[in-house]
Image 1 (cartoon, one colour):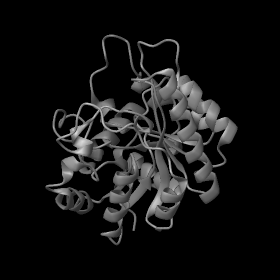
Image 2 (tube, one colour):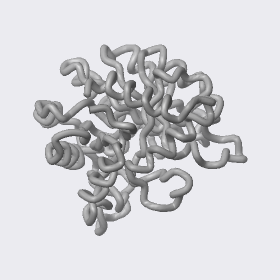
Image 3 (tube, rainbow, N blue to C red):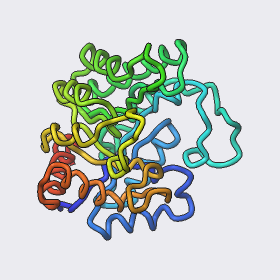
Image 4 (cartoon, rainbow, N blue to C red):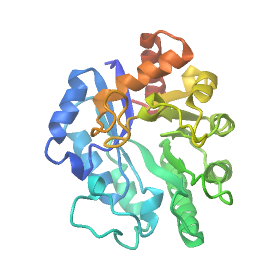
Length: 287
């Protein structure tokens, strides 16, 4: 089957969807939208696999350890539920054997989200993030699974560059390809990932008005210059709902708004863009 849309990175496996998870997935499938749920630690990874197994087609899982969960991390109620303190545990150490076991499931189509997040970091946390990232790259090499990358800078910190560091790690260690999700870097950054064979994925953020501060991504410039066969889209649900749903809990069915905006920027028919993105996703994830 060829769906009309595909959301290559959502978190319907998070606690915030506990009350209506099945309805959210069914709403996506009924609107011809496939969904890949992405793990951020071992528990949410297991939940993503469990969900994928509940549907014969159109729902898949990616498993891995988010860089912020390699150490003490901000407690997000949408992800982990209520009742936690501001900071969770001391962090998860990436256990290759636990994740390797999950990779035996045929509905698991990638490893991640892994990478580097410098939004809140210290020298110690950066070192932990890099070590975990390398371990996940090595597991991807071992299994042939593509990587789902998370890369984020702190624009106030001029001494660290998560994009440059991630590219260096990939150049040194990666034998597989994949995608950098929720891209918000420069065109130069995008070209470096593309040169390594990584696709670039955009979220509902591309539907927002440009930031007057000049910080962040110039999405029009990047999208115009990234070849269509290297573009993907993701919702990062429950975050970053696109216009006209901004401010609401995000969900996979809204991915059509991102497709629409990409088509507008590239001055291409929406159907052509939708078909290309689905083909790109099928190619990189082998689905």
